[in-house]
Image (cartoon, rainbow, N blue to C red; front, side, top):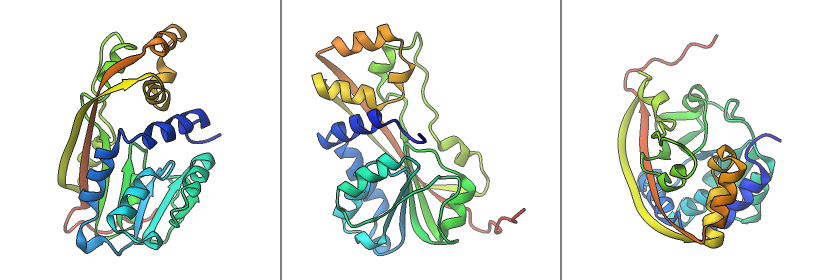
Length: 234
């Protein structure tokens, strides 16, 4: 089944429902939903269970202007269960089912994307908001699995190295949280680190009753560079 495994989705829904990523959701909504863009086309690529779509709606973006796609059917079903009234579709990031220049704001939060497709469906003057892990994100969990902890480059490199795009702004959200029992296990199971861990490492982490964990997120807003010609098909 494409997309995240059902067990990861369930763990993520449980963890997010407890509010540990609320600071990130608030920052995403604040960075993306400025007054000029509230009533415009919005798309979240890899919307998962709809957690961030809900935050945007609470910020004032009308449900009719919000779209979310995810390749995992189970994730879209979970998002639909929120009954937000937003537009949802099962679709791949590499083949977005939308007309050219459909959206003023596009978001990718810890999700893969196809940069050519993003540019195709983004309106002139629109912004692409990307959220990825900061260098310290979940370093305590990574230290329990890997011999040496390497910072994650996220999806920023493909944009930073592309002359067609320019960074408009960036911000950072970082905090430490004490996770106990079920919350700690939900976080572990919703990350790819669970699948990277050996059975012995999984068992060790599952025996922990609590762990102080660093949450570290980077938010970057990108625009197509001024004067960049339209890409030539073919």
